[in-house]
Structure formats: structure tokens, C-alpha cells
Image (cartoon, rainbow, N blue to C red; front, side, top):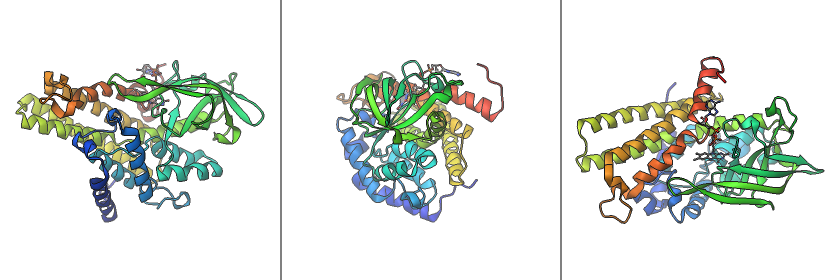
Length: 392
Ligand SMILES: Cc1cc2nc3c(=O)[nH]c(=O)nc-3n(C[C@H](O)[C@H](O)[C@H](O)COP(=O)(O)OP(=O)(O)OC[C@H]3O[C@@H](n4cnc5c(N)ncnc54)[C@H](O)[C@@H]3O)c2cc1C
């Protein structure tokens, strides 16, 4: 594997950086926000949509897609470069669910009509997505989900509740998996995957505020929600296979190492300025920096595999686990480094780093749950990667 960027990729990075230098709202850069804490900004949804459309107009969201879907057929390292630069410039605007997960899953499993209907909207940044997989009693074991869709003449009618739906409060479309056969044995053969317009009557979205006080995810209720049959992806009762590919993309889409790297550099700078770097703290920074490099190489490996049309599976699980757990450790380090100063609020003159330290820490607990838990990642690596037996 050779991770050297080509001259064309380097030029693309410069072009993106020059654009973001002009376009990213100053306050996002000053506060050095990450994807995981920018939703606390009062104007976030508006800024996210505006930036998404600007990235779409440049053709950058879909640049690595095949030409037949409106892309330029360049390597997925362009997606990686775009996202690294967005993180470096503290910019919103990349719909990780629509562009990062739904679009590649549609290219693989969607019908021609579904691709024509949705890929241009995702590429333009105008169509924002959420995904409703988890239910109050079912998360890791998606095969056992219970929300049911009953078949009627030209549609399916959904009733029930989903939860933890990130961006459900402003998404235009929803990637939904529900049960369509209660008798199926094994149970995963009774699931169907639908594309759902969030304006469909009968959908109620209620906020769930996370520990950091941010509104990122929601609970979603379905009350006689009618979904046309042509919105099924991958065939009736074959939705589990669509979700499995979706999860593989999900575990490779976010370059979380880059967020951890930026945050770590900020903390190291703060420590230097405030003379906090005793030998113990220096060792901690050095270890985290080495861990960052490992996480970065995991992400480059999955991107390299995708550039060769390989589907990373155990590698996706490693990538997700290593980078999200790294961001958790960096967030913990921020709390230790700043000690009691971390508790100051944004209006205090002595507050370190705009009061972000506790919110990054509190938000970080979710990192080993979202996109599938770290335990499930370890199971995938043990069973599919090493061929070890199932324990449960
Ligand atoms: C920030 C955040 C954003 C999210 N966004 C979304 C979203 O947009 N859409 C969506 O559908 N969901 C979303 N989720 C939900 C997420 O996918 C689930 O929380 C996750 O899959 C775990 O499911 P659960 O919470 O039901 O926990 P459970 O599955 O009940 O697991 C509880 C604990 O048991 C462990 N466990 C379960 N099964 C096994 C096993 N077989 N082997 C070993 N350990 C096991 C788990 O690792 C976990 O520690 C989000 C979650 C978070 C935290």
C-alpha cells in the first residue's frame, strides 16, 4: 500500500483549503469546533445546509463517484482529503449519513429509479438524510427489531418507535429498516429497507438531548406512515443485507482520527502556553500522538481498499473502534490537563478553549456506542477476522 498523494490530489487539497479559508464562518474556526460539538451553535443547521450546498455546487461531495452517477471517477482519497480539510477548517457541510452512507449503499443495492431520484440531491448538498435503525429495545442486534410495516395494496404502513436518530429533526429523507414478516426464521429474513420522505404524514420527531446538552439525536414515532412500495431497497424481506453494507460504509466514512488529531494539537498548544507539560503530561501527549498515527493509517487502509473496489469489513470495524476510542482518550486527557479550569463556562475570562473541554468529554461517551458499539466491533474482528468462535 502506498499512501502518497498524487500531485492532482495535493492540488485538490489546496483548492479545498483555499475555498474553506474564505467560506467557513469565523466563529466556527475561532472556537475550533468539531463535527461532534458544532451542533451546540444556535445557527448550526442553517450553516450546515449552506455549506453543504456550496460543497455540492463545487462537485466535491460526489467527486469520487462513478461518472454514471454524476461523479468524476477519481479515487476515494478525494473524499478523505475533503473531509480532512473540513475538519482542519472546523467546517460543517458534509452530510455523513446521506453522502457517506446512503449514497454508496444506493449505488450498490438501489434500483435505477432510486439512484436517479436521490443521488443528484445528495451530490448537490440539498438533500440531507437520517437513518432510523435503532429501537428502544434493539440496537446491536438489529435482526430482532420490531417496528412493523403492514402491506397494503400499493404501500406499506409503518407503526412504532425508533430512537437515537441523528439529524432526524431536520433531515429531508430517512433510511429506515422495519419488520415486514413476524414469522421469519431466522428473524433477519423478515426485515425490509425503505427510503422514507420525512414530510410523510404520521411522523413525529421528538428531541433527545445528550449528556453534553446538545440536540443531535431524536426519538421518532411512526403512526400509520404510508410508504410506497417502490421505496423498498434491495427487495422485500431482504433489508438486512442492505443494512450490513450500510454499516460497512458507516464504519469507514468519518475520519475521526483527524478530529482527534486537531483536538490533541490544540490541547498540546494550550499546555505549552500554560506551562502544564510536566514529564507525565508530555508522555501522555506523545502516546496519544502515536495512537493518532495508528488511527490515521487504519482509515487510509480502508480508503485504499475502497479505491480498489474491495469492501472493507473487519478493517472497517477496526477503523471505527480505533479512531472513536482515540477521540474518547483525547477528550479524557483534555479534562485531566485542564483540571478544575475545565469547569469554567464560556463567559469566564479564564475558560480554556471556549469551554469545549467538558462538552467534548461528555459527548465522547457516545463514541463507543454510535455506528455500532466497540464490543460489536471487537466481535466482528474476532469472529470474521480471526475465525474465533461465537461466544453468545
Ligand atoms: C451519538 C449516537 C448517535 C447515534 N445515531 C444513531 C442514528 O442516527 N440512527 C440509529 O439508528 N441509531 C443511532 N445510534 C444508536 C446506536 O447505533 C446504538 O446505541 C448502538 O447500536 C447500541 O445499541 P443499544 O444502544 O440498543 O445498546 P445494546 O445493543 O442494548 O447494547 C448494550 C451493551 O451491550 C453490549 N452488547 C450488545 N450485544 C453484544 C454482543 N453480541 N456482544 C458483546 N456485547 C454486546 C453493547 O456493546 C453495549 O455495551 C446512535 C447512538 C449514539 C450514542
